[in-house]
Length: 317
Image (cartoon, rainbow, N blue to C red; front, side, top):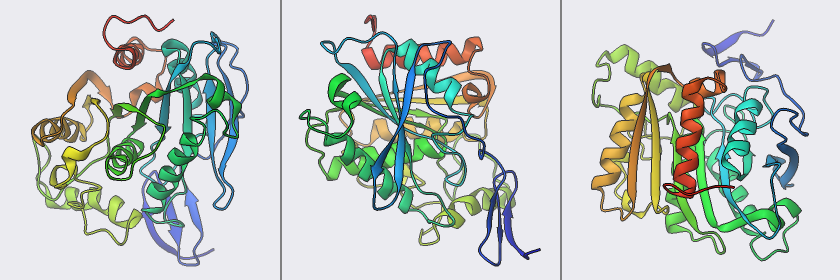
């Protein structure tokens, strides 16, 4: 058996011969029609050169004459694990799409250590540009051309995917994407960190170093936990975030909750012209809504996002 190089418990084992063993998120579910919600999904190739693909979701109630808000979604997994095709994601995203009456595309970026960050960022950015190619109605994917409202685009993700969503909103602030109007940024339990504690974060140096290790191994060229990709509070260009509004979720039993609060604080003070709201769920753990998509608190999260997408008191149907 190959000799172990390093392990990130519950995530991956990397062996000295280059073999990578992922410890979660390897099971998949095919696209199709969800019998419970009526949501239909299908897989599409986004970038033939890299093999990057995505899973598209379309709600049951649809009228080509009435365009739907579009959510560009990035899955979590510490950058290392899961894909849009993982069984873990399908129940929540079906529910999210059905309840919110949106069209959603979940991006399959390439993952470290085989493809170190910033490959995930570049893949995600190329996927956004591919989505934009549909705004004049001539793109390759009919669902986007027929049903998506490119004037109401939201960028979203959970955990490491929320990190990617933020970075995409930053990149869109400096590299314009013709045809897309980025209305909102929705971050669910974002994976951010930093050298120094914020809020009630642990000051245990060993624990902090261990958490930083996840990022440094994912992005070996990074300057560390205070890299603006990981610590947006130190990004001098934070005010250029492209979206008009931001909704950030934290949860009580998650050590990353302080970063969610901190993100809201620094974004609000950065000179950014938009409006940010931070919501904390009581008594739940990191990405609880993916583990338990049908519980009341998960549905409350979905309804909060729905209200955000359609603005207050709007009827999505």
